[in-house]
Amino acid sequence: MAYSTEKLSEEKVFKDPVHRYIHVRDRVIWDLIGTAEFQRLRRIKQLGTTYLTFHGAEHSRFNHSLGVYEIVRRIVDDVFDGRPEWKQESRLLSLCAALLHDLGHGPFSHAFEKVFDLDHEEFTQAIILGDTEVHKILKKVDPNFPKQVAEVIAKTSENKLVVSLISSQIDADRMDYLQRDAYFTGVSYGHFDMERILRVMRPREDQVVIKQSGMHAVEDYIMSRYQMYWQVYFHPVSRSAEVILTKILHRAKDLYHEGYTFKFTPIHFQSLFLTKVELKDYLKLDEAVMMFYFQMWQEEEDLILSDLCKRFMNRNLFKYVEFDPAKEYKKQYELMTLFEKAGINPDYYLVVDSSSDLPYDFYRPGEEGERLPIHLLMKNNELKELSRQSEIVDAISGKRRTDHKLYFPADLLFDDSQHQAIKSQIRDLLDLK
Image 1 (spheres, rainbow, N blue to C red):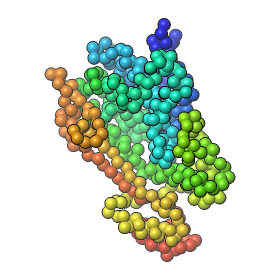
Image 2: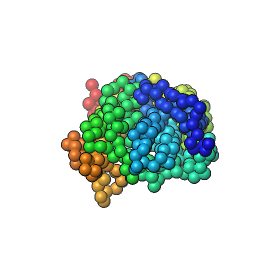
Image 3: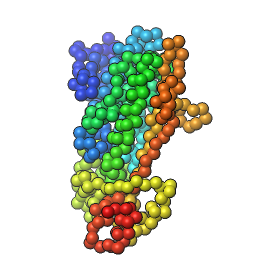
């Protein structure tokens, strides 16, 4: 029997709080799950610093990746199987891309990427194409198979239907993380009728479409995504923790380039600090490693690095006020000047953070960025773009919501040890009582 079609002698199942069970029958999938690169995802949190706000949010990208795989497995095995538009040879490609789509995430994901100017999707492709256990397994399917999987994740594959299963405005990735993140944070916003959506999905040559009768389930999904972004993903307390995390990494990087002698040398970060990140070094990084350094750096002679690490480890986070940088730039400049006079470095202790989300949009000719819209399959077999049929979706289509906040250490501003007059001015400017 060919490796690509080999089945396990007995089905393996993972007990899952969101999907009840995750089913594995394919030898390829089981072997991929057992690789060092995939097991590393157990040590990367799905929601970064959000556990400091919602204490249950300790779940990992390993959980999520299995969930995305299970949704795609159900779609291709239960919904698409036997339909003339679905090519059975795309099945394993879909399952592998779903399972491996987040393989390249680093510790604390997006904050980590911003500091070191990295792209997790590029690392995902590097893992799939590089000298890794994952690559060896994919290559056993076919010498060209790793490249095919990498192209799906890069969204450059000719198989647009499989790409849309993994990455579109209604894909398996979003359907899993909304429900999983809602479950572990304990909120109700992310719940929607996935069973209904799966039943009304239909394959087309270049994308997944939704039967007209499933429109209201899709409306519910889009609104749940909107609520999750503003109530969970952009929660200001989580963002405060992310601001501190980002500043720790910036400070460590700056000190390294200044020739500072660390009590505990950041050997795991050296290739990142030198912007020569090799895959083998990247794969050694996870959140346990990061937290170990933060724990040790609390004892550093550098007061800024030490203080920021203590704040992160002990959840002594920055406070925030609403702030509009476009209108209040003079106020920001004045605050920076006063912070410096008070002996508080504004580069690390006065931070504007912005959150922005576009809940749904459709392709607009002439605009940058391809936005594949959600299409409804009408009874006469025509396709119509969702917002043209749904008043609810039309009301939010193309409307980007942006939020800005100014973060600062309130405890230092109320510390009466020195610079009292200046700190009083800062408190007045920030309207702190």
